[in-house]
View (tube, rainbow over the protein chains, first blue to last red):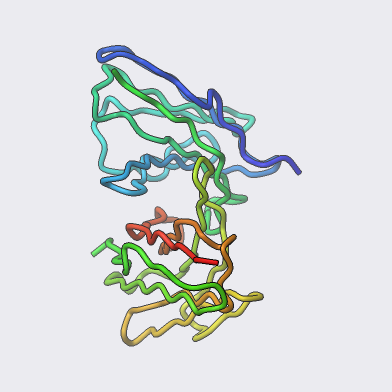
Length: 113
Length: 111
């Protein structure tokens, strides 16, 4: 079974721009979660989707948004990029809405200049 | 109350030694405690996980010890190998809740 895939793997943007990151979960998995990883803050939860519905949301500003499609694929969007948004963005999928066992993708490395 | 505190931040162990990483939590509603291993340039990979009704779980060289009354759990890596050098994260989750991570421990195993 293929693992979680994330595209693109690397991205360079400038302040003020917006960016969209994509995540394809493991086949059959219906729950997708997004995390931001930085050296200073570690792994921070962004949001979680199950069956196209956002079930949980972390403490991030409204510039961070996401959605899930009917095929369970998910996208996250960051608008009006700031330097501090430079991070590794990780997507994880799990089988069901309880979402206990989460499998992570390789991440998208975002650099904001 | 949602925090998971992990220590130490970094750990250096000789090959063949035992690596021990500790985590503590406050939220008694947490009912799932996984450990993840992350290599540079990769996403975290699930290593081993435990539920609070079990005091110990072993998988190969990796063991989780869980102390529910103290609200602490730890990862023991027996016979540590240079290939174990990575960053390790403990985490905790409630049913239907988000996964909360510790700050991570950078493990270096010297040959």
